[in-house]
Amino acid sequence: MNSETIAQVARVNGVQLNTADAAPLTPEELRQRACTELLRQAAQAAGLLTGSDPPSSDGVLSEAATNAIEALLERSVQVADPSDDECRRHYAAHTSAYQTGEEVRLRHILFAVTPGVNVGALRKRAEAALLDVRNHDDQDPDRFGAAARALSNCPSGAAGGDLGWLAAPDCAPEFAREMFGHAEVGVLPRLVHSRFGLHVVEVLERKPGVTQAFEVVQARVAQSLRQQTYVTALRQYLSVLAGDATLEGVDLEAAATPLLQ
Image (cartoon, rainbow, N blue to C red; front, side):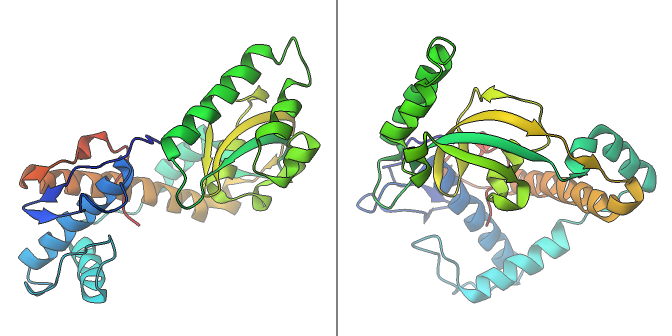
C-alpha cells in the first residue's frame, strides 16, 4: 500500500472529493472516492439517481446513491457463469487454495495503524525492521524475537512475536490470504498488510492441508471465477467512465483493482 498522503484538492468533473484543510487522504482512499463519484455521476446520467443528490463530502454516500449505484452495476457490469471446463482448469492450477487443515507456525512484529498515526513514518519503521531481521537473522537467531519485543504493538511481542500454530479461520481474511496456500518458510520478503496494520512475518513451520476433491469445492471454484471476472469487468467499466471524465488530482491508473467498498 502506498502510504503517501494527499494534500491537494481532487475533483471528478468538477465535483470536489476532499478539502485542503481536512485530514490528508492516502492515494488509495482518494482513488476509492473518485471511483465512487464516477459511479454516482453515471447513475445520475442513467436516470437512476436524481440530479439533486448531494456529492459526498466525507466518502459516505446517501442511501439513494448507494441503491442507484447497485442498480447501475447490475445493469452495466454483467458476467457469465464459468463453464465446467473453466472451473476444472482453475482448480487444477490452484489446488493449494482448496486444501483443508493447513496450519502455519509463525511469529510477527506488528506496526499498528491507529487513528492519527503517520502512516508514512510507520511504514518506514516497518520496512527498516524487515530489512534488519532479513539481513541479520542468520547470524543472530534471536534477532527477530528481540525486534518483536522492542517494536511490536501486539501482546505477542513479549514472547518474541510468537503466535504459535494458526489455521486460516484464526486469522483476518486478508492476513490468511498471505499465509496459507504458499510454500514460503522464513522471514517473508515483504510487509503483510491487514486491518490491524503492517506485519513483519516469519513462517517457522508449515503443516500441509488435505486437498479437497473438485466435486466438493466446485461451487467455491465457480464463485471465485465469477468474482475474478466481475472485478475485471468492473475495472473496465470504471476505465471507460474515467476516460470520459475530467479528473483533477487523482490517478486511477495506479489502482490494481477497483477501489470500492
